[in-house]
Image (cartoon, rainbow, N blue to C red; front, side, top):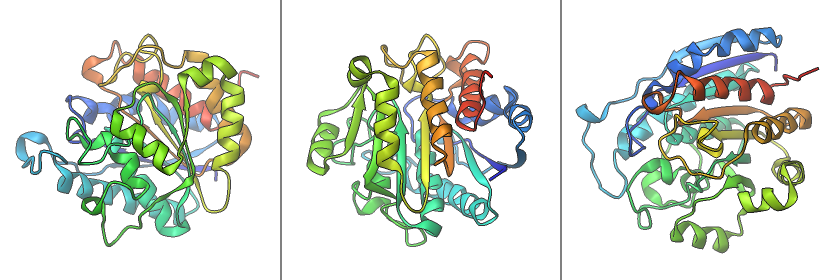
Length: 297
């Protein structure tokens, strides 16, 4: 696939802090299209899907705040992702909070069935409405994509689960709530924490992860910028110290490119209000380049 379909998802209703709605603009401003063209890709930018703003929306159920509006926006993402996939393009979704991954995965699964998923994130995003301490949907999105978050997340137009739990791997995790730990154990989800990376090294972890996610259908990579240590990605809403360093993150995504399995990619949680001189968005663009084949030599 030599054409990348860029889809902006300026959604911040799933997060607890405002600002990630400007993430797609920040990543575009950091030169993502120019960098992709330099790698030999054609780029088709579909602009931004419509996303409601908190000031003009009803919060609804405090256990799943703004869920109807989030599902409406992610359905728009899913439609564009499906169209891009049908056209033989690689969807690149720019977030927005991590809720946007619901749309990316639904669009991919609507054509290929539940696929493989590499979730690179400081957090598990495996809460459910009954376990979430905040009611923020971006902390439930992976559970929802795996069909484990309950009936509130189901939509007739889009399949669930959108990712196969047996082919789902989390990398870089260093913050889990108790309800998330229980879900991981109950469904034997594959989680590589930062302690695993410290002990084994990023290559060994990624080799195992890529072997597990490979298979028929699609392989989606979902990159939350808070997977990186805040020194390298200060502009995120939920930073956690002790994350991936700059070269670990790049090497992880270089290994994704080397494996030749990538079908779709989203990059999320760039919060421009908390960033310094667009540093996090620039790093996001560089990591996208690595995932799509950029090399030093």
